[in-house]
Image 1 (cartoon, rainbow, N blue to C red):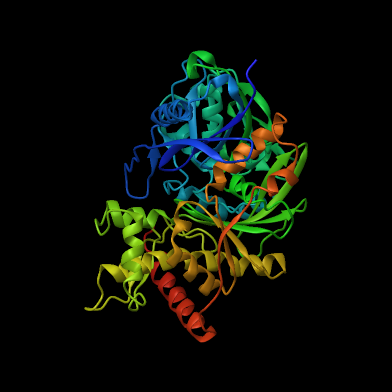
Image 2: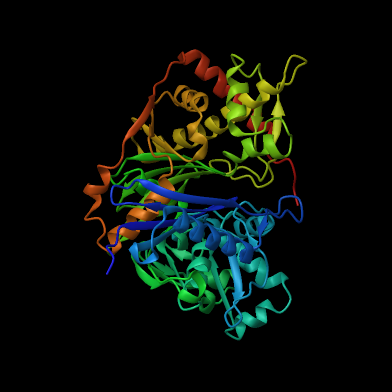
Amino acid sequence: MPEKKYIVALDQGTTSSRAVIFNKSAKKIASAQQEFKQYYPQPGWVEHDAEELFLCQLSVLKEAVQEAHIEPDQIAALGITNQRETVVLWDKHTGKPVYHAIVWQCRRTASLADELIMDGQGDVIRAKTGLLPDAYFSGTKIKWILDNVPGVKKKADNGDLLAGTIDTWLVWKLSGGKCHITDYTNACRTMLFNIHSLQWDDDLLKLLGIPRSILPKVRDSSCVYTTTDKNVCGFEVPVASVIGDQQAALFGQGCCSSGETKSTYGTGCFLLMNTGTVPVESTHKLLTTIALGKNGRITYALEGSVFIGGAVIKWLRDELGLIKNAHECDLLAESVPDSNGVILVPAFTGLGAPYWDPYARGTIVGLTRGVNKAHICRAALEAIAYQVKDELECMKEDAAREISSVKVDGGACVSDIMMQFQSDILNTPVYRPKNVETTATGAAFLAGLAVGYWKDEKELLDFWKIDHIFTPEMENSKRSSLYGQWKLAVERAKNWVRN
């Protein structure tokens, strides 16, 4: 029998699907990536075609295996990490989605979240789930599909419907419909899961009118759930990890001890601090979330969620046509000494932590005749860093501790100019590892641990290597002035539209 030499991670993101193959030294030996279509049926609405998303993920899985020149029976296990909160409902008999997947960025249920708050349910939801009532989370999206798509509520009542976040959908499809599961890190993002009792919460299900029968079984993030179906994938391998993308990055960064903090720069931008086995309640509108479920042990994290991070660079490229790629954005930003007074607030889908304003919209302030596209590009990069500072200031107070450094990852963190500004505006060292694909790495690590491919977390920590340390160079007076301008600009962006 061939030696099990490799681990495969499926990284299902908001704009693309990736597959990455790792060897025993945690080195990437092959990868494949493919973008898929974004649907915007109305302003503030964001959808994906769940079937297209799966076929895209399956395609890159096969492509990566082919590129690596390996045999499928050399794969020890497969792990999955995914965009969180995005939800799919499908017919359990035909396997066909009853509606497009509603994406985490979608704001269509903002008024429903407002109703929950006005009805006095905000504190109840917060206490049970660690979340704030918001359109961001899966529960209101599920309710919208049940209430608005003809025939779906009847399917649910008759036991003919299944629901899940993207991890659940992928496992169900890859297993040929044999396995309907999720893990703690994804379940806790639905606004339906009690992070203390570790169960789907009957009170919240009743509040939103969601039948428990459509929801998946919740399990640890690192264990063997099922195997891929040969008729679907062409081969059988154990599916041995499922974890939300931000928690995967936290684990992939080696943030296994309480107080360790990472910031991921992907489509959105997410700052997480490991708080150990104790859930820390935020008084600054950060989220209390589950960081990991492993070997029957739950660890928690504080999280700040920014909806538009690296996506602002894609907006400059695709919608404005100012740049051809992210590297050009860096070059233009580096060509000017500052943003010339321009502040860009990328609230295209509202504002996340710590504002939680679904009615905010993107704003550019400080425009003068001397502003050119280089200044706009620089302002876009700085906007990402400002949003992380908003989160970090809240996190320090909630955790009642200083944060001595931040580990960074994600595609946008390769920008030296942005990382230097990030360190400057935080007044904190920023550590960028040699491997910035820590989301896929985290999923791979957890799958490998589940099947004994790697021994323990200590072995994995040896794989984390520093590429660059960015240290603060900005004077305190300038930092204070710039951040004050940012806060003023945010006020201009808030509460721009109301339903």
